Length: 295
Ligand code: NAP
Image (tube, rainbow, N blue to C red):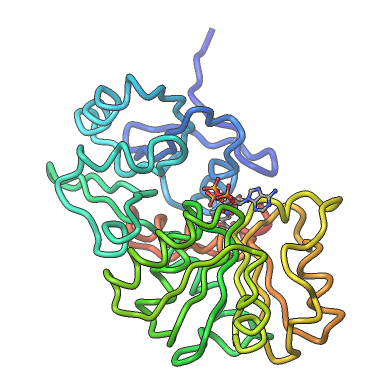
């Protein structure tokens, strides 16, 4: 029987793997939930590039062997998801300034023996904000509030600080995490930051005076939960950006719209962080609309 090597692409097309097919992928534990294979394989097909994007389930104890293996077999690039975003750093030969400040890497590029680490969440969050026709871009020189102090908040805070916002208030359920992140990033970026709890009496004024409010707290995914802030604090000229992408319109975005604010959800960031990695690996800018549709 004649054997065939192929991958079923989104929309049911069949991609033939050739002797020239270049390999990229994602590592995580777990990894099966990742939507990146759909998104990247659709964009490779659209661009006519002979690349394939594969999910690799890599357990923490196997990380070193996996990275060495990718290098040995000339994999072009790898996205890194939980729990490896920090653990992968010792295996790199170079790292971008943003990834170093954030302390986490989500994209590896293998070039001639070099293993370079980037964090594309940081530019991704800004590109999504800046391409949106309803927002007026990144509020350079203005005050910003960030809700949450986890991994995504680190990328958002670094991105906004390096782009030149005036001051950032970080508010989080666990106060110590907000204070520690604000202290660390204030020192590292030189941008004024304060950390506080969600019930802090200074938070209403910080929200009222902000030009942009970014939510990074996972609670936005649960539509049954109350908002972390009072919608009354939001001014109509404040842009409300929820990077949580399920649901596409979160309760915070809904409440902000009712207050007359412009809002933005997390799908754009998801697409752009992937598009930036795609371009690093291939040298070609992908069709972001194809990536968005694949998601
Ligand atoms: P993480 O490191 O686990 O941080 C979770 C954050 O949510 C923490 O600040 C946590 O507060 C807060 N939180 C969780 N439950 C809460 C509750 N019941 N009340 C108040 N705060 C609560 O997660 P992450 O990596 O930062 O990701 C955060 C979200 O961003 C996820 O939904 C993720 O899917 C999304 N994200 C989107 C993109 C994109 O491309 N659009 C990229 C990255 C992440 P404590 O510190 O008090 O626990």
